[in-house]
Length: 276
Image 1 (spheres, rainbow, N blue to C red):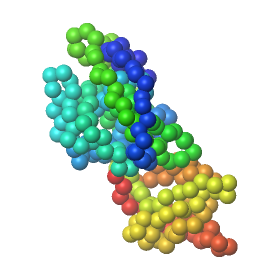
Image 2 (cartoon, rainbow, N blue to C red):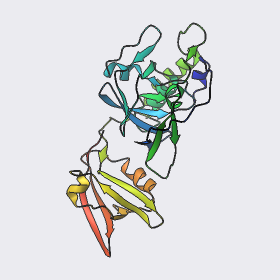
Image 3 (tube, rainbow, N blue to C red):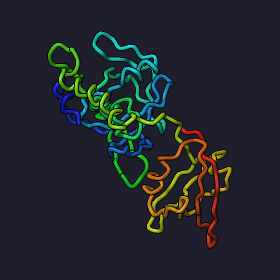
């Protein structure tokens, strides 16, 4: 989706070398309505911000509004530097920086509400290349493993004046056209609801492998070893089923899970807590 951005840069690629020490970090993700992989991040302790994984983007891009919220001021070269950049799941990225721009793709997606959420940026090459990333779309997490590799610097072609005018205009047109077509842009951002459980997948279904002490799941009486069979009336066979359904729930929503504990089936009602 980033052909316009690729025209702005010249990348020199080299092969990464695997690190021996760093343990993989599990980063939660969700699929947007446009089927982009979306992860969430905090910048300088502010956020969370919604970022899509975009291997076609040359760099990490953050919108101007998100940068302002995070108190990041771009330099003359358009780059903003972060004191702290953390992906949900606890992955802290040192010396992180981003291009502070409003790419035409994001303007269009946000203006028409295509993704179902507001997108605040894109994770691109200069950050993704530092990690070996394991994708398993039957799980609700991506595994990031640090590599002993520093990507080459991003070099702009031309005068550095930003995106091509035609593509920039296209983004503005989509932003204006969205409301005229009954598309009112992304919904208001709300804190993601959370249960406080880790799940394991087996041939027998989806099982609770651990419960966070003091979490909504713990307070409701869910225990490690419980097999989750239903989310309301929805049958649960895969972790992806839980991800798909729970991804639409926010803090304060009340849900009902049916769990199998030994020979007994139990319906458990609980209120979701406030996630990142």
